Image (cartoon, rainbow, N blue to C red; front, top):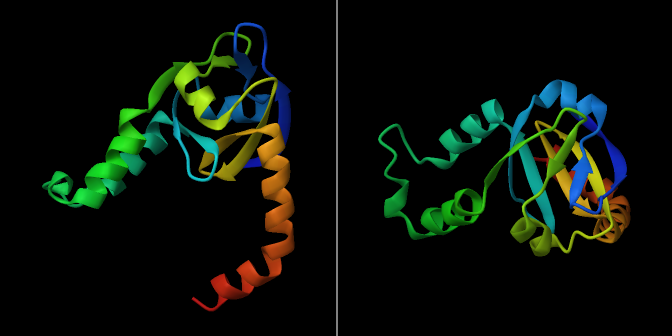
Length: 145
């Protein structure tokens, strides 16, 4: 399970280190895609296969017939990138993905069970504060479902 929060510096070549704990679980090849809410999602190749299957509408995969699903699939698949983790655990996040979340000097790397999220450090601090204020109401709402 991927859990925890880490703040890592982005080096002069736009690489960021994946935390050691995550490297062991994720392997040498990962998929990075735009996330939801100002972050990037990182999946293992196995988890990405599961996500891909869930984004397909059926065994026959006629998801391309539904406009909303086509649009979301374009967002997730069209901007996804397969990335290699180097021998010392660094990954190069494609520039177009960095720009989308204004990733500059420091990255917040967050384990979220089956995926890792990468945030601009400032945006992550703001998100944490917001969630912290809403946590009790969110728990109540989720507990009633």
